Length: 149
Image (cartoon, rainbow, N blue to C red; front, side):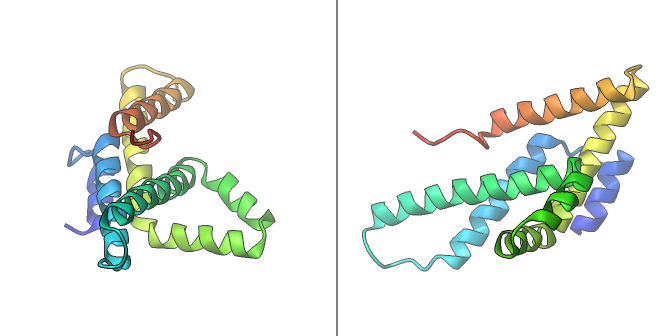
């Protein structure tokens, strides 16, 4: 299934795909991208493995943060981009473009969650807060912000 079809199906509630699913998939995408880009066979394998783990964790955090902020606070992101220095702005714009499907998918998950909470009687504000709390709980479950010991 294409990512475009996936976000449309999530938005309509045709498939069950939540915050944890999104983060697990994003983690795999980041790991696959880095594994593809890092050449192996040079240097100490243990040191290389530690560097790859650290790189994956840092890149995942950056990509997830850009996806989250672009999905939830897209107007503020655009405003902040206009005020950034060129190099910083270029990195973030490139990340947004290369993760456009992920951002649409995360936005669809949020919209579905908010609509579900409102259907159950919550105000739009409370439904939004609850959806963000659910997302934050998923971050903890998946370990987005936890350093490996």
